[in-house]
Image 1 (cartoon, rainbow, N blue to C red):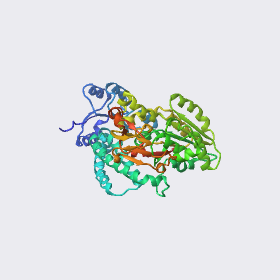
Image 2: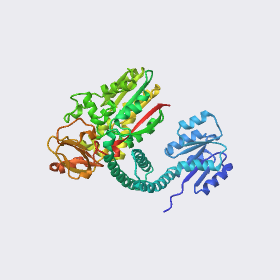
Image 3: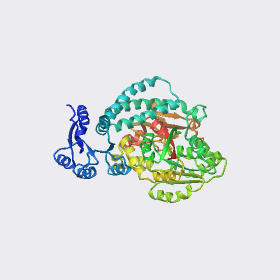
Image 4: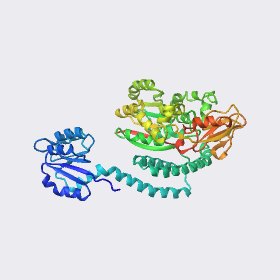
Length: 519
């Protein structure tokens, strides 16, 4: 069934002189009604609906602005293009202030008018068609690349591209193509996990060609910004996936030039390990040596109690100077308000101010425990939307803008991501095994299906302190979560469809680190 013809209304006291324009639009398939004054235009608007109105700003009788105000009451949503002879800034400012859709200065050519009309009425459809065409072409290329060996740089680049395609296809409303993308992402994720299982021991042993890891974030990205006369804000948003970060970038771009890089989280991709690695510049075995008594399976919540101390030592070691280092951890609005009150004082002097914001991690954990959160964050798209809504009104965004307003650069990153888990994997373990659903440590620990877990009994692979004899380490792959055979149904019902972290997947491991430079 053919699409209905778009209806245009052109209001201009010199409408007879615009006949070439009208014929040009009609020749492109538009229905155009033309009137020479505002009263006739308002009369037509009371009898018919229009898709777009071209309105002369200077007319005898009712001016274009007066007609605009009146037609807004009749139809608040119809796009209006203001056409005027005036090039005065005041006229343009008033038109923009009244939220006209576009602004043209006479004399205009028929093609200029067509360009504006097409963009306003068909731009979204044209963009959707272009995205679909581009993805169909690129999809074949990405599929073909699966047989080509890849290093960590290529894995990062491909995952980054897949994230961008998902965001573009969703924005264009191409839900049909999203299914093809998800299939490609499933294959990519499986192959990526195999790559990490093969390479990870070499990375932690100091392989020459390895990706930037959690331990490299401060040396590679923060340290170059530090100096005796420099001030920098370091923001860590716990549990922020790459796609969630990309959804926040448009909010930041009006205030900063955004330079993004990618790094890999260490394993397990969980706060006690990955964030300590960022702040200390050390793997867990190094942190345990620096903080005797810190390491233990029990009380994981206290394992991040020394982040500020570890960051101060690392920065002063790297910078070879004593500079001010301030550290704040924000769990809720009260913490955030208190931190914001102190922020101006921190930014007024050289040094590093580090803020950790835990909301996204709390949201991700709370989703598994709350029926309301489960409903409103049911998939990746909903989680991105909630993250963006939080960030727009968050103390994190306020702190970043305050720093940028003062000319202070901001380094923003995260410690790990999360993955939407759907598949349970049975593990057999003794009672002393850790409880996390994406990684487990314990005596005589094993997975029923070995292909679903990264398994080792050598703590040096994960750079853990030496454990008890016969300790095994399991890290879940892809979208798997661990369950015990005695609690299989209980865990499946409770955690299937949860966003979890701690395992091996590109969503958890390939992460953004961005430098925000004041505009």
